[in-house]
Image 1 (spheres, rainbow, N blue to C red):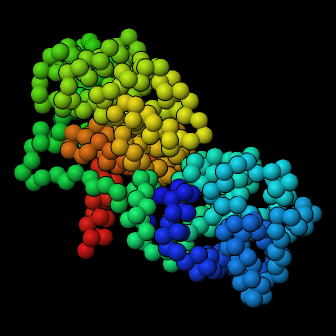
Image 2 (image 1 turned 135 degrees about the vertical axis):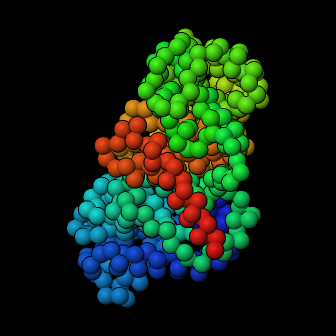
Image 3 (image 1 turned 60 degrees about the vertical axis):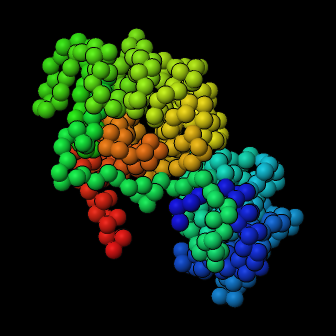
Length: 446
């Protein structure tokens, strides 16, 4: 159930199912049951809007009333701020995820007066396609939605406003997805398969990663460490000058880029972490050489400020919001579409990093990643991610799958490590974590 449906796609799915009364009844009952599971009976006000969302609310109100709850139901024109403020619990069934305009000031005042809110589908005012707020949206304690999640449930600020998110089955047939054909998913191991090590393989079979290193080697070393731990057979730190590093087994070369490119085994390059803007010309040389997978990050992206076409020929780009803004312009409230647009412009899988990282392919496919804990936001973790992506590419994963898997593993590793994480903590966790994922998929297939 990892497909994410936009509000428009959900409308299409509803039309294909062609059973609105039954689905509405099931949705309303699901809301009422969720309320009874999470709250003791209390003075409850159900605010019902004019559409299907309001219909779900009416069913929920009746179900709660029959279960002995003290319930009042109000529509948009008879609800008051005073009554809303007195309610111990408010069920927000005013507007669903497909809201196409900002909510009005009187509606916002109603929602601001509520002490505790359970939202039906999304908190009113939240755009289900983007997670953006249309004028105002309240903070819900609990949100109950149906059939499939929407992008706005996982994208901030929507993700934060939904509170605890419950997805409920209401009898919508899965076959509607074959006709809706969504292009967005929640990122997770069900969407990709990690490369398996062959018993008879050797180091070059497991792929070669070259990390270009500038005069500040720390970031490049982090990328190299991640690539090694994630299973790349050979990892080379290509330095501009001879240097001594403490890591045993890390190959360091001060060869020219032209010499490195003559070695056909060097199939994957990481370009950008610690490279320095003065060395960013190396990205152009890598692209011109052709037949190389390039992960472009950090300084390589900054060097392309305002000229995204210079990134054509890269396999994966990994900008955070600042780097994205410098290259493509601000992503705006629709991060999902911004990442898709960047992927189309460059022909590269685009990883728009953040608490709600979006991975977009040039063909329109996209994943939203929601497993990254807040302590992952610390210096150097982006360099680790670049090396991890490169390792998966070197081992034969397709560009989009490699980027999606790396982003998820990155977040999962951070969860295992816990608060206080520093970037150097992540690489040692990757090998055991990848083994857990492989075993989990094998067990699920039995």
